[in-house]
Length: 283
Image 1 (cartoon, helix red, strand yellow):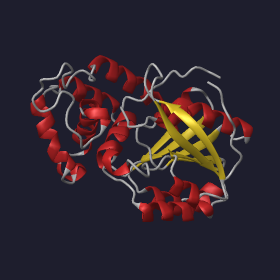
Image 2 (spheres, helix red, strand yellow; image 1 turned 120 degrees about the vertical axis):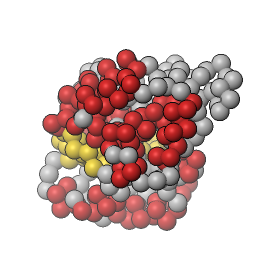
Image 3 (cartoon, helix red, strand yellow; image 1 turned 90 degrees about the horizontal axis):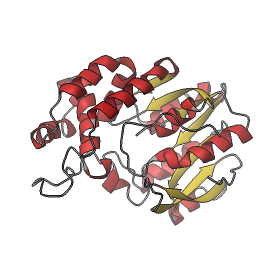
Image 4 (spheres, helix red, strand yellow; image 1 turned 180 degrees about the vertical axis):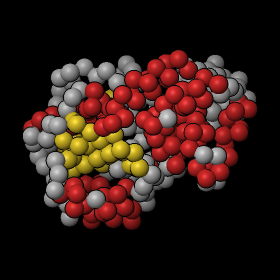
């Protein structure tokens, strides 16, 4: 398998790069290599970026309901130089962190515009605990910790990643849309094209803590109902929970131990779900 050459500039809870070997094997097993990957829950977009860099897909559709993350990806691909300059010019400080808090509670795209919203999304993601947009900053408000607010914000590295990723601009579509709305509106198109829908919804247990746009039980039920009606191939990654197993009991399930830290010391019980056969992968 080709080594990954592109990584996401975003820090994301439970980063999806751990699933790339499974999805790559899935694409090859089901003759989907060269298809379009649809990510209705884009987040850090690490799966689409990795598979594009590996040459396993021809393009991707990234849908993100959070306006700050949508703005970030939109600017990565369509306002690359302007975003990179804004990153270079923005002070990395607790004062800036406080200024960006307003972007969490208003309509940022309308009030501040897409580029400043993109910067706020990147800043809060890189500066906050575990990349959670609504969390406290690394080092706390007192900044008395060993690790300060700027410890995860290497401007040169981030700009380099963004410029590298921007080369895919002609192969990626970015939309600010709810996942189910996207899948419903494009259902006919998805049925008639070569694509794989990769679904990574908010975790069933920790979703409320990790994401601003989290799911309750009814949301997971609606997602399951929609997926059960789909004929095109889809693959979902989610936390392993009895309720999820109940909702997808008649689909293919695969338990995996996802590795999240750089030294692969921390594992999490995850579940892959699909309407196609799933493969065990060693990596």
